[in-house]
Length: 50
Image (cartoon, rainbow, N blue to C red; front, side, top):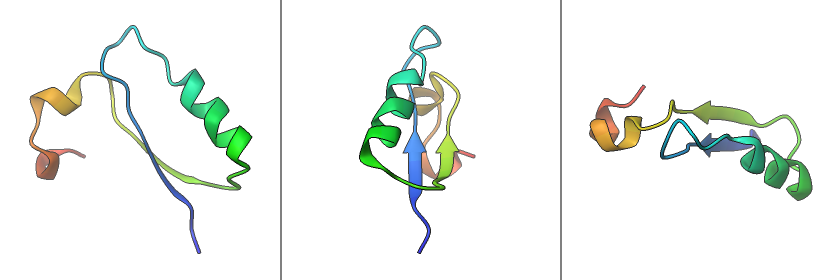
């Protein structure tokens, strides 16, 4: 079973470093990561996101 992970930040000033640490601490192996660029969540409807 694949481990699916969705990572996002709200602004370009927020790095995803903390999210990566949480994944490592949780012991999630070989996650399939979906990551959005900063700020996209407020500009697009969820069904329009890449």
